[in-house]
Image (cartoon, rainbow, N blue to C red; front, side, top):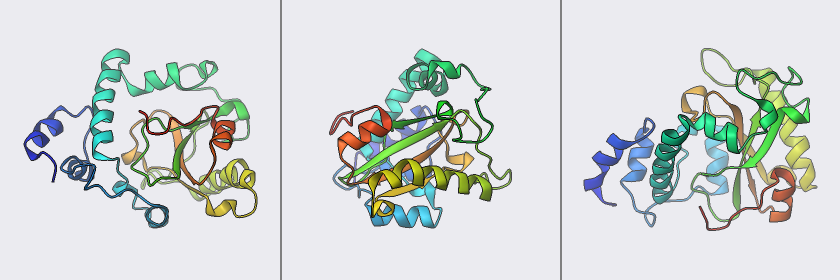
Amino acid sequence: MGDQSSLPQAVEDAPFPLTEVDKWVLSQTDEEFKMHDWEDLKHIIETNDLAVLKRKPSDLRRYMAWTAEIKAQYGSMTQYILQHRLPKSWGQPPFTPESEVPFAAASDYKVLLNDWPYGLAPGITHIVVWSRTPISTDPDSGDLTPESRARVERFVKEYFVDALGPGGEDQVLWFKNWVALQSVRTLEHFHVMVRDVDDDVLERWTGERPRRGEQ
Protein backbone atom coordinates (compact mmCIF):
# COMPACT_ATOMS: atom_id res chain seq x y z
CA MET A 1 0.00 0.00 0.00
CA GLY A 2 0.97 3.66 -0.31
CA ASP A 3 2.25 5.93 2.42
CA GLN A 4 -0.38 5.54 5.14
CA SER A 5 1.24 8.11 7.43
CA SER A 6 0.33 11.01 5.14
CA LEU A 7 -3.27 9.91 4.57
CA PRO A 8 -4.91 11.62 7.59
CA GLN A 9 -3.24 14.92 6.69
CA ALA A 10 -4.26 14.59 3.04
CA VAL A 11 -7.86 14.01 4.08
CA GLU A 12 -7.79 16.94 6.50
CA ASP A 13 -6.26 19.29 3.91
CA ALA A 14 -8.53 18.23 1.04
CA PRO A 15 -10.10 21.22 -0.78
CA PHE A 16 -13.32 19.25 -1.30
CA PRO A 17 -15.07 16.45 0.62
CA LEU A 18 -13.35 13.15 -0.06
CA THR A 19 -15.46 10.07 -0.65
CA GLU A 20 -14.55 6.72 0.85
CA VAL A 21 -13.36 5.73 -2.62
CA ASP A 22 -11.06 8.79 -2.70
CA LYS A 23 -9.60 7.86 0.67
CA TRP A 24 -9.03 4.31 -0.51
CA VAL A 25 -7.31 5.58 -3.66
CA LEU A 26 -5.03 7.83 -1.62
CA SER A 27 -3.92 4.79 0.38
CA GLN A 28 -2.58 3.19 -2.81
CA THR A 29 0.39 3.68 -5.07
CA ASP A 30 -0.03 4.16 -8.82
CA GLU A 31 1.36 0.66 -9.30
CA GLU A 32 -1.35 -0.82 -7.09
CA PHE A 33 -4.13 1.14 -8.77
CA LYS A 34 -6.28 -0.66 -11.34
CA MET A 35 -7.20 1.54 -14.29
CA HIS A 36 -10.79 1.60 -15.52
CA ASP A 37 -10.96 -0.35 -18.77
CA TRP A 38 -13.84 -0.19 -21.26
CA GLU A 39 -15.78 -3.14 -19.85
CA ASP A 40 -15.42 -1.72 -16.35
CA LEU A 41 -16.74 1.66 -17.50
CA LYS A 42 -19.67 0.03 -19.28
CA HIS A 43 -20.62 -1.86 -16.13
CA ILE A 44 -20.28 1.22 -13.91
CA ILE A 45 -22.46 3.31 -16.22
CA GLU A 46 -25.05 0.58 -16.85
CA THR A 47 -25.48 0.01 -13.11
CA ASN A 48 -25.29 3.76 -12.35
CA ASP A 49 -22.58 3.01 -9.78
CA LEU A 50 -20.84 6.29 -10.58
CA ALA A 51 -19.40 6.80 -7.11
CA VAL A 52 -16.74 4.16 -7.83
CA LEU A 53 -15.15 6.16 -10.66
CA LYS A 54 -11.74 7.25 -9.47
CA ARG A 55 -8.54 8.97 -10.47
CA LYS A 56 -5.08 7.47 -10.28
CA PRO A 57 -3.53 8.14 -6.82
CA SER A 58 -0.89 10.57 -8.10
CA ASP A 59 -3.49 12.35 -10.26
CA LEU A 60 -5.90 12.64 -7.33
CA ARG A 61 -3.19 14.18 -5.15
CA ARG A 62 -2.27 16.63 -7.92
CA TYR A 63 -5.93 17.41 -8.52
CA MET A 64 -6.40 18.16 -4.82
CA ALA A 65 -3.38 20.49 -4.79
CA TRP A 66 -4.47 22.17 -8.02
CA THR A 67 -8.03 22.65 -6.73
CA ALA A 68 -6.73 24.29 -3.56
CA GLU A 69 -4.62 26.70 -5.65
CA ILE A 70 -7.51 27.49 -8.00
CA LYS A 71 -9.90 28.18 -5.13
CA ALA A 72 -7.33 30.43 -3.47
CA GLN A 73 -6.78 32.37 -6.70
CA TYR A 74 -10.29 32.48 -8.18
CA GLY A 75 -12.52 31.86 -5.18
CA SER A 76 -14.14 28.80 -6.76
CA MET A 77 -13.74 26.19 -9.46
CA THR A 78 -16.75 27.72 -11.18
CA GLN A 79 -15.01 31.06 -11.67
CA TYR A 80 -11.88 29.42 -13.05
CA ILE A 81 -13.90 27.42 -15.58
CA LEU A 82 -15.93 30.47 -16.58
CA GLN A 83 -12.81 32.57 -17.10
CA HIS A 84 -10.59 30.02 -18.82
CA ARG A 85 -12.65 27.19 -20.29
CA LEU A 86 -16.12 28.35 -21.30
CA PRO A 87 -17.17 31.02 -23.82
CA LYS A 88 -16.99 34.56 -22.48
CA SER A 89 -20.37 35.19 -24.11
CA TRP A 90 -22.00 32.95 -21.50
CA GLY A 91 -21.31 35.52 -18.81
CA GLN A 92 -22.07 34.61 -15.20
CA PRO A 93 -24.78 32.25 -13.95
CA PRO A 94 -27.71 32.24 -13.96
CA PHE A 95 -27.19 32.08 -17.71
CA THR A 96 -29.51 33.27 -20.45
CA PRO A 97 -29.27 30.52 -23.07
CA GLU A 98 -30.18 31.05 -26.69
CA SER A 99 -32.58 28.10 -26.40
CA GLU A 100 -34.41 26.65 -23.42
CA VAL A 101 -33.99 23.23 -25.03
CA PRO A 102 -30.63 21.61 -24.20
CA PHE A 103 -28.30 21.25 -27.22
CA ALA A 104 -30.76 22.92 -29.62
CA ALA A 105 -28.37 25.85 -30.16
CA ALA A 106 -24.65 25.32 -30.76
CA SER A 107 -23.85 28.46 -28.76
CA ASP A 108 -25.39 26.85 -25.68
CA TYR A 109 -22.91 24.01 -25.30
CA LYS A 110 -19.14 23.56 -25.26
CA VAL A 111 -17.31 20.26 -25.75
CA LEU A 112 -13.91 20.06 -24.05
CA LEU A 113 -11.33 17.52 -23.01
CA ASN A 114 -11.42 16.83 -19.29
CA ASP A 115 -8.39 18.47 -17.67
CA TRP A 116 -8.44 15.89 -14.86
CA PRO A 117 -9.72 12.59 -16.26
CA TYR A 118 -10.43 9.48 -14.26
CA GLY A 119 -7.84 6.72 -14.20
CA LEU A 120 -8.51 5.25 -17.63
CA ALA A 121 -6.83 2.47 -19.57
CA PRO A 122 -4.79 3.50 -22.63
CA GLY A 123 -6.89 4.45 -25.64
CA ILE A 124 -9.78 5.91 -23.62
CA THR A 125 -10.33 9.68 -23.62
CA HIS A 126 -12.48 11.63 -21.16
CA ILE A 127 -14.56 14.50 -22.59
CA VAL A 128 -16.91 16.91 -20.83
CA VAL A 129 -19.92 18.56 -22.47
CA TRP A 130 -20.84 21.84 -20.77
CA SER A 131 -24.34 23.24 -21.25
CA ARG A 132 -25.53 26.80 -20.80
CA THR A 133 -29.10 25.46 -20.82
CA PRO A 134 -30.21 23.58 -17.68
CA ILE A 135 -30.67 19.82 -18.06
CA SER A 136 -33.56 18.72 -15.89
CA THR A 137 -32.95 16.21 -13.11
CA ASP A 138 -35.25 14.41 -10.72
CA PRO A 139 -35.40 16.46 -7.49
CA ASP A 140 -35.46 13.34 -5.33
CA SER A 141 -32.72 11.23 -6.91
CA GLY A 142 -30.64 13.96 -8.55
CA ASP A 143 -30.54 11.77 -11.66
CA LEU A 144 -31.68 12.77 -15.15
CA THR A 145 -35.37 12.80 -15.98
CA PRO A 146 -36.41 10.44 -18.80
CA GLU A 147 -36.86 13.42 -21.15
CA SER A 148 -33.42 14.80 -20.31
CA ARG A 149 -31.82 11.39 -20.75
CA ALA A 150 -33.37 11.09 -24.19
CA ARG A 151 -32.07 14.55 -25.16
CA VAL A 152 -28.54 13.73 -24.03
CA GLU A 153 -28.68 10.36 -25.80
CA ARG A 154 -29.70 12.06 -29.03
CA PHE A 155 -26.96 14.67 -28.75
CA VAL A 156 -24.28 12.04 -28.02
CA LYS A 157 -25.39 10.00 -31.02
CA GLU A 158 -25.44 12.94 -33.42
CA TYR A 159 -22.25 14.65 -32.20
CA PHE A 160 -20.01 11.70 -31.35
CA VAL A 161 -21.34 8.33 -32.49
CA ASP A 162 -22.44 9.30 -36.00
CA ALA A 163 -19.12 11.08 -36.60
CA LEU A 164 -17.28 7.80 -36.03
CA GLY A 165 -19.23 5.91 -38.68
CA PRO A 166 -20.20 2.23 -38.54
CA GLY A 167 -19.51 0.74 -35.12
CA GLY A 168 -19.31 4.17 -33.52
CA GLU A 169 -21.80 3.17 -30.85
CA ASP A 170 -19.19 0.74 -29.49
CA GLN A 171 -16.67 3.56 -29.03
CA VAL A 172 -18.75 5.98 -26.99
CA LEU A 173 -20.13 5.94 -23.44
CA TRP A 174 -21.66 8.79 -21.49
CA PHE A 175 -22.97 9.56 -18.03
CA LYS A 176 -24.08 12.48 -15.94
CA ASN A 177 -23.06 12.45 -12.31
CA TRP A 178 -25.89 12.69 -9.84
CA VAL A 179 -25.97 16.09 -8.20
CA ALA A 180 -24.31 14.74 -5.03
CA LEU A 181 -21.25 13.57 -7.01
CA GLN A 182 -20.67 16.73 -9.03
CA SER A 183 -17.51 18.69 -8.30
CA VAL A 184 -18.79 21.76 -10.20
CA ARG A 185 -22.48 21.86 -9.37
CA THR A 186 -23.28 25.36 -10.61
CA LEU A 187 -22.27 24.59 -14.20
CA GLU A 188 -24.33 22.05 -16.13
CA HIS A 189 -22.26 19.27 -17.66
CA PHE A 190 -22.05 15.58 -18.46
CA HIS A 191 -19.22 13.19 -19.25
CA VAL A 192 -18.37 11.28 -22.43
CA MET A 193 -15.84 8.47 -22.71
CA VAL A 194 -14.54 7.48 -26.13
CA ARG A 195 -12.09 4.78 -27.10
CA ASP A 196 -9.68 4.39 -29.99
CA VAL A 197 -10.47 7.81 -31.44
CA ASP A 198 -7.55 9.56 -33.11
CA ASP A 199 -6.34 12.97 -32.01
CA ASP A 200 -7.53 14.71 -35.18
CA VAL A 201 -11.12 13.70 -34.45
CA LEU A 202 -10.78 14.66 -30.79
CA GLU A 203 -9.46 18.05 -31.84
CA ARG A 204 -12.33 18.52 -34.28
CA TRP A 205 -14.82 17.79 -31.50
CA THR A 206 -13.20 19.81 -28.73
CA GLY A 207 -10.89 22.33 -30.35
CA GLU A 208 -8.12 20.84 -28.22
CA ARG A 209 -5.41 18.31 -28.87
CA PRO A 210 -4.82 15.73 -26.13
CA ARG A 211 -1.62 16.16 -24.12
CA ARG A 212 -0.58 12.55 -23.92
CA GLY A 213 1.22 11.73 -20.69
CA GLU A 214 1.10 15.35 -19.50
CA GLN A 215 -0.81 17.19 -16.83
